[in-house]
Structures are given as structure tokens and as C-alpha cells.
Amino acid sequence: MIKTSLPQRFLRLLRRIFNTEQIFQQQQHAHEQHHRLLLAVGNGLKSLSTDSEKIKQSIQYKRCAEMVLLLSPMDVAGAKYVRVGKDYDGGYIMLDYFHETKVEAAYSFGINDDISWDEAMANRGIEVFMYDHTIERLPKNHPKFHYFKEGVTGYNKGPCLKTLGELIQRNGHSSSNSLIMKMDTEGCEWDIFSEAGSSVINQFSQIAMEFHGLSSAIYDTKYPLVAAVLKRINETHQCVHVHANSTSIPLWIGELVLPSELEVTYVRRADVKDRLVTNTRQFPTEMDQPTYPGWPDIYLGDFSSEMGTRQK
Image (cartoon, rainbow, N blue to C red; front, side, top):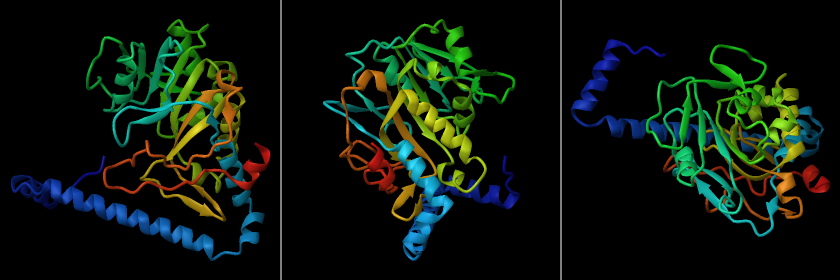
């Protein structure tokens, strides 16, 4: 927790008294937005000014190309998409076949103060199992909610932490293949999915989640873990939608763009194997929204690489 000085607290009190606190926050918000835009533009210009052939020979480019390949979306013929959750941050684009396919339960990891996705699932008559060990209670209850003050983990053990497989087993869903998932665990997803076996992941017909630290991973020792997790998920699931978190600073390297934080929707390959087709959408789509009102969305194009186009 960041401590503020007495003068800072006094100024904040004055802003509240004269009803200028919201204006100040909006100005600060705009300043942060401009700062991020400048960093993003500088990032892109730096990439453009570098010899493209040299870039493609670098280990960073090859890692970025592999990561984009692993995350490149395909489309599902005849599919209808729907936004699940609230406007801006908290909503996910998913395949709208909830009325066609029975969903036995929804698992939601990382709640904080946003239950909009969970409520949308509950209002469809789906039991929602919710996990977040960082909050004391939910901001709102629903008859279909099952909240646990626990977190999901992988190999990193700790109090109030259980693996994905342990939670599924405890809830009596070990034999189910009609589960769905939403996950936003602020970077813990790499540990969670590195431990979860393909048989556990394959129990979920759809997975909507946010990946963290993608662009930074191509420069450090975490890359093998990130690549391994993406490959493991791809064994059973196909990415069908991507959206960059508007607060992330994207990395441009050659013709590739990789956001630090990326919202991804997966569908189980076995459910759509005869309907997967080459993606023709540009991201963000009309259904996507920036993380915060007034912020520009990050353009990803079709989010594919030459490597990915050749191998699909």
C-alpha cells in the first residue's frame, strides 16, 4: 500500500469538498493515457526504423512470431458471438451457443469487485463456482452463485490455494465435459495451466481469459513456460477471439504486434472441428470495447503472422 503525505491528503480533502476530485482523476487518467500512447508510438517507430531482415533473424522476433502463431484466432463457420459481462473492462466475447449446449457449471477465477460475467451466466440458469482469495465477500449475491474465499494455483502452493483439478473434483465435476471458464488471475495463469493436465482443460467447452506479461516474456527466462502453456491449451482448444487490454503497451517487432495483456476466447476443438475456418475478422471487432471509456482500442488486425498463415 502506497502511503500519502499529510499535504497530499489535505489537497485530496479540498478537492472532495469543492467537488473537483472527479475532475482531477479524469485529468490524471487522460495524462496516463497520453503517456501510454506516446510509448506505444515510440515503440512502433523504433521498429519501423530497424532493418526488417535483421529483425527477423533475432530471437525476440522468432519468439514473438511463435507466440502470435499460438494465439492466432480461427473462426467458426455459422457461429454467432455475444458479449458476456459488462461494458468495457469485465466483458468477454464468446460463442453464443449457451442455448444449444447444456452447460453443467461455470468456473470463475479472479472476481475482485466485478461479477458481471458471473451474473450473465447465472441469469442463463448456470451454476457459477467463483474463486478469489483476495476479497472477503461478493459485491452482490445470486441464487446460482457459489463463492469460495480460495484461489486457484498450479505448482505454487499456499494457504487457501487449490489446483484446477482439485476444485473440479471437490465440486463433483470430475466426469463432466460441459464446463465453461472465465479467468483473470493477474499472471498466475501460467502456473495454473502448467500444472493442469490436458484432460482437465478438455472438460471446458469454452475458456475466456486474460493472459498477462506476453510481450515481456519474449525477453526473459519465462518464455519457455509461456510457450509451453499456450501449446498445452492448443492441444484441446482453438483460439477464436482476441482483444488487447487497452492499458497494455503493445510491442511492435517487424510486422508483428503483441500486447502485454491479451483477452482470449478458446473453444474446444472437438466441439467445432468440422466448422473451423480461416479467420477474416479484424480485431478489435465491433463487439469489442476498450478497457476504459474514452481510451482507444489497440488495433491487432487479423492477429496472425507469416509463420501462422503458412502452417494453418
